[in-house]
Image (cartoon, rainbow, N blue to C red):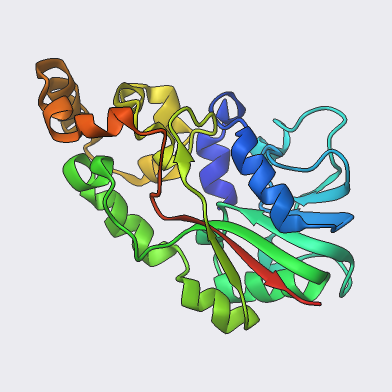
Length: 246
């Protein structure tokens, strides 16, 4: 993961800004936890400013993009968190578990250092129905489905978990894969794609982009998916998984 984000992470913060609705949902999930470790923290999005946070991030490119005066950061892997047992009230991981080299060990580590709850924002690989992947980039699902842990994997790691859907607002400002579902032209922007890790793994992207470009120009995309333009949000499989410990 560190190598991938050292390669694609330049300018990441320009496109991956915290969305206030996801920020609020994460704050609710963290409940009253006063100390938090943010695992796979990236540039620091969604770190609460009103609580004590320690960030863990393996990629130096991402660490260098963290805001001055933000939470202290430790360069380390999720699979070997350099903290004692129960060191924090909560452990948090946001759209990062699918990058971990040993997911089971990383989930165990999160539970080890959190005494009250563990919170993960992830994508459920059992879901489908996104036009970008169905019509233009089906290989994204082929890449991502084996990487993302199933909801059952969280249950196996932690026992009882709460699973909350997070529907993506049409004007989401955090540019993860599904963020631009109602703004199809955005996927033609190299900067947008550069902040989405899966695109870095694709081959022969230009022919697919050319097809999307043509479909947008001649109205094909609107004929197929124009009904989405009247929707304010959509469920694309993003989930907030909570494991209460006490």
